[in-house]
Image 1 (tube, rainbow, N blue to C red):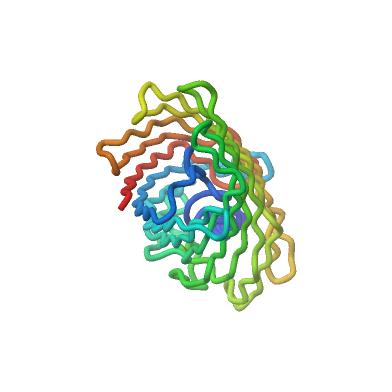
Image 2 (image 1 turned 90 degrees about the vertical axis):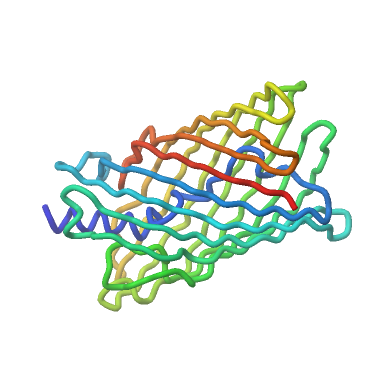
Length: 291
């Protein structure tokens, strides 16, 4: 049982428990196109607690936890290519992972930086007057993060990742806005996944939806749901049987505390998990500065 528990937890670490989530989470409003020449800097902070571990839909006995404190530095520049607004950007994750309970001796903890992320949204619909936007974003994850093949937990993944996301924003009246997004992620191989074994992974996908209500032009309340499928891994050619389906929710608010400064806070949790750790609580904070 101990060996099985450690393998299940390690597999989930390889699936992306290391950093943000099961796929590409967005915040409501992220796909709002800003004017050409605008620069945006963002700092994210997330604390998440996972106190339950599932394997094939069944809860693993015992106290099995994984806590994470993750930050992200993000820089965005809005420009135009022909008639289209484009926003090349770079993201650098960093932070700490710490196993708790019965998993602490086996998994330990990890500190350092995550893999550097490059992205650029192209807006094919940009209608600020009616608050309607549609954008498509390719992502490239470079294997630059902290990684040690001898550790079960790592912030870096030691592999290239490629993702494509599309999102649509639609305003209703003066106060209501709906955001929907979908993405798919493909994975390169990790040729040093412990014992010199090769790690492959099937594609992952996610759909997200948000509803925002704005009491004023500078303040909104928001709620969101998402469903993610995380592809199974094959380690040394052996299928790990660890594909995961996760449904989660979040509630939050965002407010401009100055003409160019926004503060965002959301709280969420997983509603259903069939493989891997279930988040019991997730607090996200974000500071956005336009310059």
